[in-house]
Image 1 (tube, rainbow, N blue to C red):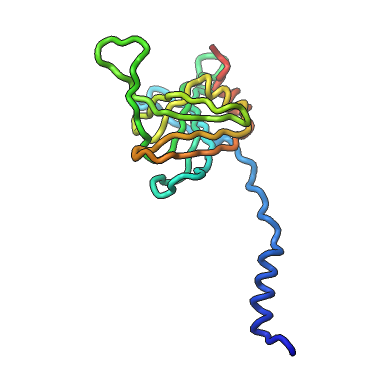
Image 2: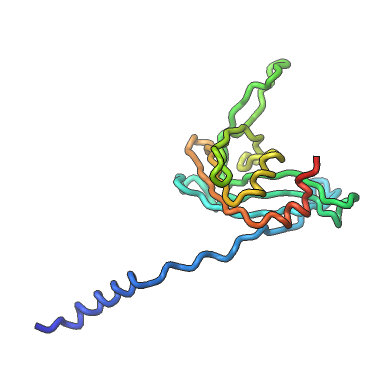
Length: 189
C-alpha cells in the first residue's frame, strides 16, 4: 500500500524540525558605554552597561531584562591621569523588597533601607549581603569590592526579592572587563 501525499508532508516537516542544528550562540557580549550628566549638569560621566536574563522568576512582575551598570569619569574627562569610579548598580526594572536594617551602632531610631541579595561569581560559594536601594527602588547599589569581583568573573548570578516577595534570579555573562577597568580605575583605593 502506498502512503498518501498528505501523510508524507507532516512527516517531512517533523523530520526537518528535528534535523535543524542548534541555533548559534549570540554574538559576544560587551560593555555598552553611554554618556550621562549628573543631576546638576556639573560634570559628565560614562555608564557602562551589560544586560542579563531572568531565570526561574515570575516573569509577569518584571518588565524587561536585568542589567549591570558601572558609572565612571573617564581619564579624558577627569582632572587626574586615571579614570574615577563613581558607582555600580544592579537594575531589575521592578520594585525591589526593601528591608530596614538595624545599624551596627544605634544612635536614635535610625534604620537603614537595604536590599537583601545573594550572589555567586563563577563557581565560588554564594555570598549574602545587604545593598543600598537606588532612589527609584528598582535598582541596588553594588559595593566597590563586589564590583571588583564581578569584573574579574565570567558569570554572575544574583538573587533578590521584588516588592511582593517573589524571588528574582538574574544571570549575567560578564564580558571582557578591560574597557571598564581602564576607564573607571576600580582598583584605586
